[in-house]
Length: 322
Image (cartoon, rainbow, N blue to C red; front, side, top):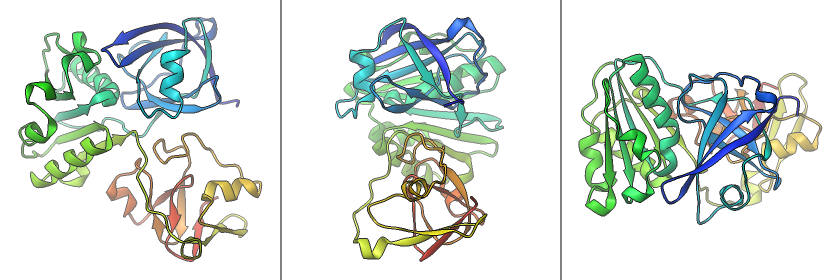
């Protein structure tokens, strides 16, 4: 665990009725690694689990990191621990920031967030405002009380506009996304983050408006739901290009598990295909992509990467660059 950083919980406060903002500072008040909007960190919680949280707020200071965590009713342990147990002064281990959702060069940016998906997009909005780059932020919440960073997002802006859409006021995504996602223009990029249903609605609306896939960037918090299949149908072989070693991958094990069982180091984090830590180049084979990190363009490119924690192979043998 030489790549982790020790931090201290410097402050915890409410952001709306369902979320907590947590400020983290380095042990000994040392500077933290720099980051760009869209980055996330792995947080190693004392309860024994690792969760990924987007960095939010301003990225202009090296003194602290800010994350914001919603209380999830179906929590697998992460949000429940943070909301019920985490306290100021507590020490945590985190990873350095990783960014698979970075802002690209654009003349104008459209930001679409729902729920706690506001965290990376709030950081993007602050960055774009400071850089003088035009943008629109549309934030979808059930009610005003559910919104995080409401006070900050309702401050006057010079270069952007922020619109809060409340479902309890008849402004749900189903009714207003089509108006928010206007016809695409050259030099405009769309960034979206939120629950799976919201992300699907954004893609459907953007597709209907003629947005090209290359101008759409998304980040999801949940793995794809995959139907179960028979063990015989799903068993395949994974081969290491460096050594030629091969092992069968049965239906009840991931590629990552098989590799680790055979002494191969795999950089795991979320183990759900949402963080990108285990993305590995593919030399040969037909990948059955099950991650939510890569875009459709990346999943169909000539040079592909596979998420070893969740994706599988449609071909009998998969050769990876390890």
